[in-house]
Image: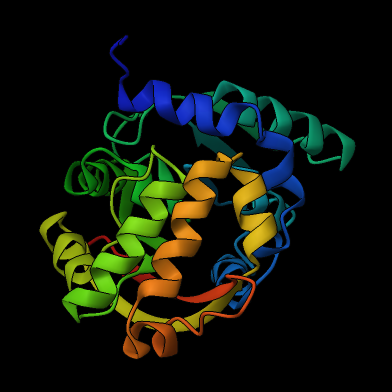
Length: 255
């Protein structure tokens, strides 16, 4: 069997489905996206890094408020979709650049804001990625991170990590709120306002976005059916397999 790197898995998983992420309702809206936009209101001279931009929803949402947005992602196919959509929307202040989160090709203190939404659970080394985010942020600058978080209870954590990995082999880990806050602090940032909200994942579209194989989809459904009532209640697992996750939004400032 040929050896696969994590980066190759990410490109394989997301490249062919880049368009699906552009139109995904889960990614195109939400109170977390609104919170990121609110951070840049009135900051017309700001430069923003959209770290792990995916379908570009953060870039599109903040571009009208700021001077420049750099949409940064590992997937070249995803970046091509973002660049095309930016042109179609007349957002000429969005540029794209490819690379990994753990080694950013930007100078120190080169951004006023660093935002990352639904990306960090794919990073090989979250501590290093957060340190890089802090490095490229200007003193006094603000970082905003949005991602799925796991509950503190080990059983609930294990369930979510398992279904995530069955759906998407490029998944690395969802972290707890406590882990996020600790790692942000270790990166040299001062954690500030943090909030959580719930997001329902409709099973069919959730699987289709990642082209999950029938065998893996069946394993997810079998696992859901086999779990205890505690798991079913927390994730609000429905008869069709749809379920609900916890999402953390946290802001931090560079001293």
